[in-house]
Image (cartoon, rainbow, N blue to C red; front, side):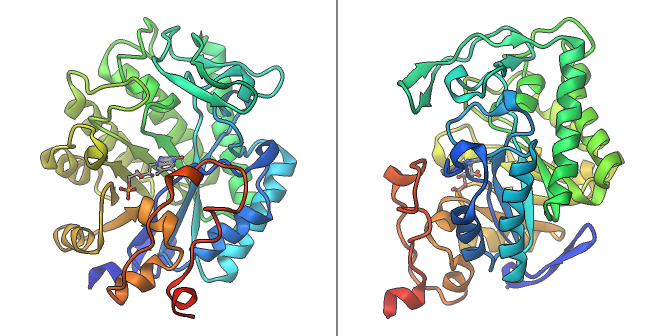
Length: 361
Ligand SMILES: Cc1cc2nc3c(=O)[nH]c(=O)nc-3n(C[C@H](O)[C@H](O)[C@H](O)COP(=O)(O)O)c2cc1C
């Protein structure tokens, strides 16, 4: 099966096409990665590539409770525990850089940080805070030109920190209604400067961050995730969605980044990403594509049979099955995911999902 075959990605070779999708798990107490997180990722190192949970490049991007950052010395040291443990198990790992932008609550931010976005447009919905439970998203501060440049530099510094911490590369989170997506989507971007209005202007933030990051750490270590037709965090498909992602794919192809990761959340109720849209992104970009959303062994293999330079990512099945690759190879049954422990603070429902061997023992 192609699923278990190697693929060259940038300057590294992945041992199979199984990718662990990025998943926020909220175990980073004080926003600092720890030994428990190292154990969780090391348990899952069978996959060809692990992508971390969303990691904030900025104090302003820590919208959720207990998510990790990658802007302080302590955070870099914490991530070294994770990358060392994964590499020791012969795995590869990319850091997902996620700035939450308007999705957040000041309770979750360190002192002095603020909720920002392309425009002062509040997202409908609420955010969990450890102090007061669910609270409305606040209206974000509209980013000034100086804020935009500062934030872009935070991504670049976080990418350099990622390399220092031993990551094999970084994935910019340009999906699911977080900051980069907030710029792309006119539902959250009503700016009248060069970062708003036309499709090219709304794509500018993403392309500039990718270019600056590639300049700093290498295009072969820089990647991005998109969710065309996504309907999450109060953003929705917009007129010209296909054209916007075709344009992004073209510009990112020129930079030569390592991959574009496409999210299709139709298995969770979002509109389906039309096959034609995915094909245009693939053909226009010209590099590796990661496909994700609702996949199992069979559907992933079908995608790989049709797409030469491709990888397939698994979220919920990987979360509940540290030995997902072995289980798929043996056609063994999978553990069920426990939804009640997705974002809790300790090892329960995190590092205690059993492997096949442990089940039979
Ligand atoms: C608990 C949980 C946390 C998630 N956190 C993130 C995240 O931090 N960044 C991201 O890009 N996607 C995140 N996702 C989405 C997954 O990466 C993936 O796209 C989604 O689960 C669909 O794939 P699946 O059907 O294989 O689970 C998360 C999903 C889950 C279940």
